[in-house]
Image (tube, rainbow, N blue to C red; front, side, top):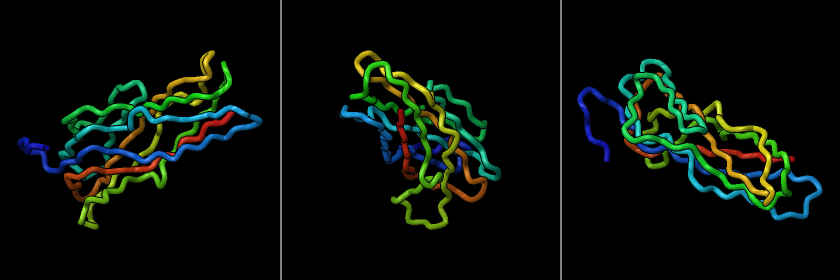
Length: 166
C-alpha cells in the first residue's frame, strides 16, 4: 500500500497492460509463438504536480528518465517477450503500438479521474533469431500525465499491439 509522504498529493499504482499479439508470417510451416515473460510495468509513482504534462520514460534497457514532478516509489521494469518457433537466423521486424494510446482504470468509480498517455515505445525494431529460431525482446515506453486534474490510487491499464513480420 502507498503511504502518504509529506507534500505528495496524487498517487498512482502500477500500470499494467493487455497484449494483442500478431504474427505476420509469409510461407511458414513453423509454429511461431510469442510468450509474455513480464509485463511493461512503470512501477508505483507519485505525481507531486499535475499542472502540466510530465513524462516518465522507461527504456527497454531498464533506464528511467523522468521529470522531477514524478517520484518513483517502486521501480518499474520493461516488458519481456520470448519469441520461438521461427526459422534459424531469421530477421524479424517488430512494431509496437498502444490501443487506444491512453490508459484506463476499471477500478476507478470517478469518471473525472485523469488517464495517462502511453507513447514512444522503446525496443529494437529489427532483430534476428538465434540458431534455435528464438529470441527475447524487451519493451519500454513513455508515460505522460494529463497536465490537469488528479489521479486515484488505483491500477491503470493499456493494451499493446505487437506485430512481428518477416
